[in-house]
Length: 285
Image 1 (spheres, rainbow, N blue to C red):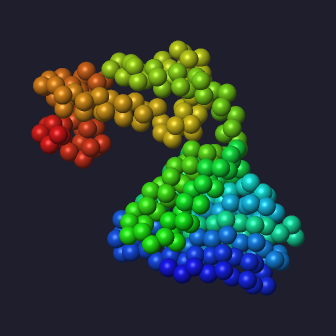
Image 2: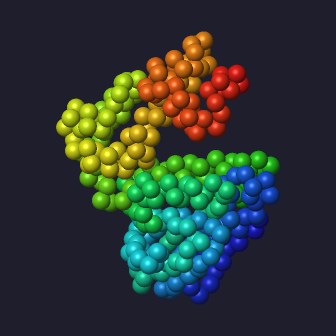
Image 3: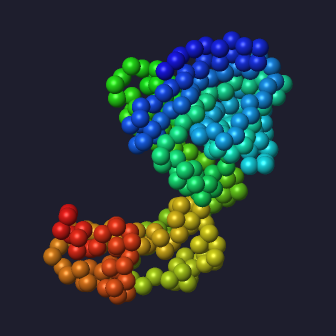
């Protein structure tokens, strides 16, 4: 780890480079670099094929981000989250900006970044409240510069908190209109929680909650990150696991009681979801 303050013609930067352990690289989310800068002149930072993910906050000033062949205009309060394997550049305007950034990576990052995009996340977004992001950045910086022997584990926790904030707060602006339907969607989800043993069709839900079934399908996934069928199956499997662990009911009976139409179908879905059979799950747990 090296901690240095860079005074240059283009930027003044407080930059901390971090070298994670092999254990962290193979198992955790880990930091590569973290810092903050104040631009002295308009300048451009350009990279590609970098095995890293970048998050930064625009504290003041303005600039642009070029990513995935799209140009994003950035101003104070905006945040950026991108995959640096892809070509990108960011550039300060004459309204010189101040940035706080962190480069990081981890074995689970490709899946997390894909989930972020699936949920509607954009490369740049403007959160309603920056406090959470700033607090996590401060924690990351202090942990990375500390001498704690468990700092790789702590950085993993703090980066996971950052990913949680990104997944929960960074929605495509067009999806903001979904907030007016959140009450109805929560009612749909509650109905699935309570009526999971029953046969439930999309037409039934559409009729019951007065929502077009195609629109319901789309906004449910946009809001909760999974389809109605995926959510219902998850609920049914969770209840089945509870019965497998805490009752002596036959496995075939449990499948039928949890809403699976046949014992064979239950066995197939359970194995696909848990990686083991219901019988094996019961014996292990």
